[in-house]
Image 1 (spheres, rainbow, N blue to C red):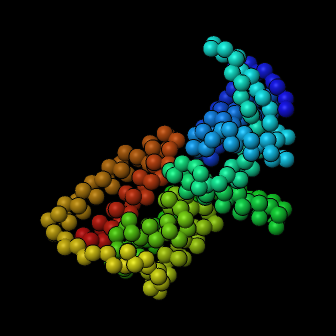
Image 2 (cartoon, rainbow, N blue to C red):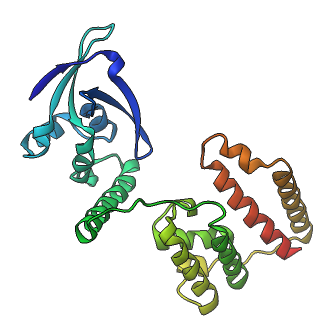
Image 3 (cartoon, rainbow, N blue to C red):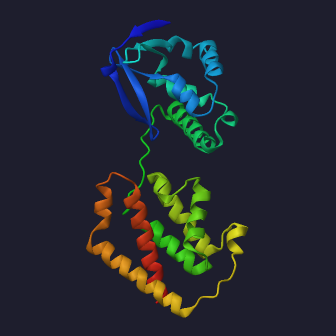
Length: 260
C-alpha cells in the first residue's frame, strides 16, 4: 500500500453519475477517497474497508493519501477512479439507504449491460439521450393514446415509464425512442395491455366553465412560452428543466386544443 502526500491544490471535484465527488490527482491519475462515498450511501466504512482489502483486484489499487490542511494533515484511503465502478457493482443494495437503492440497482444493471456489450461486440457505444425535438413523435403518440383510451397524460406517460424503466421520457435513450413510439401506438390502436390501476380510472364529471377556463389558461401559457422563448432561457441554466417544461407545455396545449 503506497503512502502519498499531496498539496490541497491537487484536489478537484468531478461528476460521477450525476453526483459530485472529490478527486485527488497523483501522477496525472485520479483517485477517490472511499470513506465519504461509503458512508454517504449508508454503509459501514470498517466493513467496506475490509472488503476492499480482501479483494484481490481492488486491494492492488489502494493508496493512502495525506492532504495538508489548516486543521492538520488529513489521511484518506483511496482507490483509482477507474476502480470505483467495480466496487459499486459488488455492493449489496439491500444494505444501502432505501432512497438510494433503486438508483444503485439501475446503475448495476447498466454495468452488466455494458460488460455484455463489450464481450460480445468488442466495443461499447455511447448511450445518448434524446432531445426535445426527437421526442415529438412520442408526444404525438401519447396524445393519441390519451384520446383513444380516455386516460390522463400522467397515466399515459406512466405506461412508458413502466415499460422502459425510466423516471421520465427525458431519460429515454435514442435507441429506445422508436420502440417507445411503436409501443404507445400499439397500446392506443390495438388495445394492448394497460395496467389495471390505469384502465379502471374513475370517471370524472367535468364542469364546462372550469374546462373553458383551463383551455384559456393553457392557451395563454403557450402564447407567452413561445413569445418569450422560455425553452432557450431554461437551456441557458444548463438544466433538464427546459426539456421537461417544453414537453408539458406542448402536451398540455395540444390536449386543450382537442377539447376546445
